[in-house]
Image (tube, helix red, strand yellow):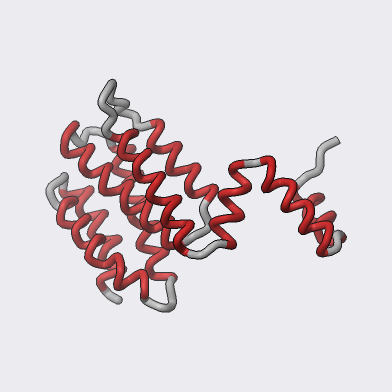
Length: 177
């Protein structure tokens, strides 16, 4: 019989520090995903940003491959999902979400904007990045990403009025700050 998450939590609360440390080290050794989660949580900002840069290259290939174009962007969506799952670094998450939106806008500009699902995905990711920026109490993210968010809005204005208005509504939250 396998443990449930609540059962796991109970067992972990009963374990002493040495047992927890050993368990984490074993998981770290045997799982690349666990390594990414632990590294992005415990290491400095540089690790998260290096992880983001690697993911950006993969995202760019997924959006604009030199072979067959995947109009559903299955691989790009999966890369984004995996990055969110594996990275705990807020700056790196903002970086990837905004990059995804930038690539998505370029993709829509090249291949047309008929895909409502893609537009919703871009709005959702833009809103997620803006929310992360606003959650930062130090305002470091605000100063670092405000210009990029503004550039994204400038590009989004070239699309249908409904889509660009939705993007602008998200941006307004940031601009009010």
